[in-house]
Length: 238
Image (cartoon, rainbow, N blue to C red; front, side):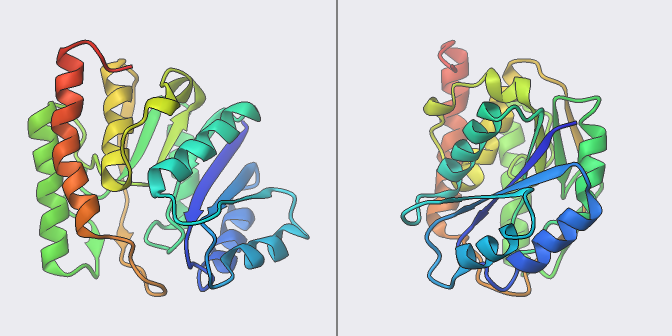
């Protein structure tokens, strides 16, 4: 099994060293690709220090903040080029529990896309303000209603793709970023009939660093679902 975990970063120096240490310790076959958007706090420098003694860590430095979606697309292309069979996404801030990585990889042996879901077994989110929780929860309901996609957590960013899913998608035509990027990738996989499985996780709000959430990300997701649905109806989703 050749698996790559992609972690986009911007100002995550308080988290990245500890996260990498836990991931490498607990998952023997895993390689990690950090995509850093020129963090001024020295995140990339911390990753390089870790790389000096660990060949399973890789780093791509980008010139500035270019967005979550473009970071993952860059990572996907790297994974496909280098022969990885399973390609994972994960946040750098410990909101996703690194102990869940083996669970996602194990489930991915039988499914094409595995999503670590905050909503597949009730609501499993710790330390979010009620306003943000309601926005996220009802956004998921909204996406499901508009698209008919049977995914309870379509905006979640903790997942594992089989390489054949990414090979089937024209990554240069991905339109979105943020929450909308996660929706779009799920939608494209679902429309093509790939086997999708949600497994419950507990999502915990970051302790260190600052959230990257903003109004633009929310509104992009609101409009993107209509765009995707119309393109599907027109047979132009490729």
